[in-house]
Image 1: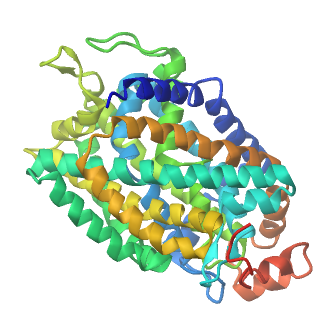
Image 2 (image 1 turned 135 degrees about the horizontal axis):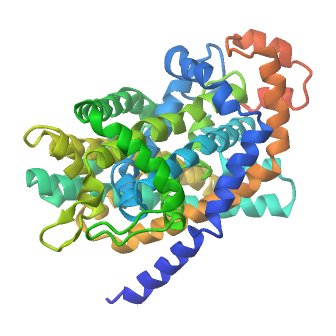
Image 3 (image 1 turned 90 degrees about the vertical axis):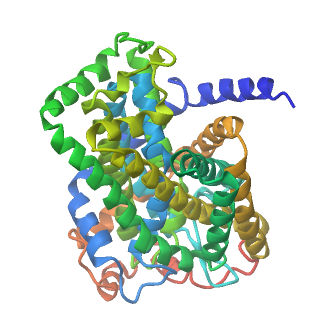
Length: 494
C-alpha cells in the first residue's frame, strides 16, 4: 500500500502544528506567563523541590497510590527516552548548536508549565471504582473550567492522549530498542519484540503501584549510567567546552552558516527545532506528567507540583545538556558521512559523538544501552498515561484490556517500519498540548492564588501532613480536596 500521500499530508500538518506561528509561541508564551504569575517559582524553589522529591520522597499519612518519588520517576520514565538521544541530535543537526539554547529556554520556562499542570492534576484528581487515583488534563480541564468548553477540552485531550500513547509511548520506543539491539548485538527484532512484550505485561498488569516500584529502582540507575558516560567525555574534551558554549549562544541568535554538507539554518529553524525537540523530550505543557502526579501520596497539590517540576530540570537541564554538549564539543554535529558526502544522520550522531570521546566501542555501547533503557522506561510511563485516559473515556472496566493491548502493540512496533508513525506521533503530541495549554492559561489565577497561600505558610516545604491540614483549614476548596478519596459513583466517566 502506497502511503506516500498520507505521510506527506501528516508531515505538512506536523510542520504547521510545530511551526513558528502556532504551537511554539503558545508553548513559550504560556511558560513565560506562568513564570511571571508564579513569581519565578521554578528558580526560587528548585533547591527545596529537589530535596523534597529526591531525599524526603514522601509525605507520611498523605492520601494517594504511590510516593512522590515514585510519581517523579514514573514521569521521568515517560520523558527520558529517545528524545534525549535522537531528539537532541535532530535538533542540533538541523537547527545547529543554537538549538540547544532554545531547548534550555523551553526547559526553564516549561518548569512553570510542568508545575502548574501537576498542581492541577492533584488538585482535581478523583478516585475510581478500584480505589486508584485518576487525574490529569482529562479531569482538571472539565472540573476546573465549568461548562461545555471545559468538557470539550477534557475529551479532546483524552482522545488525543489515548491515540498518542500507542505512537510516542509504544511503537516508536519499541522500534528504537529493536533496531539498535539488532545493529549493535545482532539480536533479531522479533526476539526483542517478544521480550519487551512479556516485560510490559508483567509490569503493567500490576498497575501504577507496580510501575512505580519498577521506575523508582530503574530510572535513577539509567540516568546516572548515561550521565556519567557523558561527563567523562566532557572532562576529556574540557578544552573544547568554552568554544562549544560560545557557539551555542552565538548561533541561538544568528543561525548557522553552511558547513561542509550541512544545509545551514536560520535562527527561526534553531528556535523551531530547539523548542519542538525540547517539548518532545521533557513534555512540559503537554499535560502528560500531571497524570502521574495525580497518583502521588501528597499532603498538598503544591508539594507534588514542585516535585514534578524537577522532572523537567533533570530531563532537559541535565540529560539533554549532556547529550548536546557531547555532540557539539566533539565536533560531531557537522561531521560528514563519507558514503553520502552529506552531514551524518541524527539517528547515529549521538552514538558517533560518544564513540569519539570514549575508547574502543564503549561510546557506541553506552548510547545503545542508554537508548534501550530510556525507551523501555518510556513504554511503562506512557502505558499509565494511556490507561488513565481510557478510564476517563470508557470507565474502569476498560483498563485491563487496554494494558494487555498496549503490551501486544509493543511487539508490532519492534518488527515494522515506522516512519509514518513517527510523523503521526508529532501531530498527536501537538494535539495533546493544545487543550492543555489553553486550560493552563485559564486556570493560572487559581494556581497562582493557591500556590501563594501554601508557600506563605511553608516556604521551605518542611511542613508535616498535620501542619498542612492546620494552616489550610477553612480555605475554599480544601475540604473538598481532602475528601476526594470517596469513589465516584459513575466509575470515573463523565
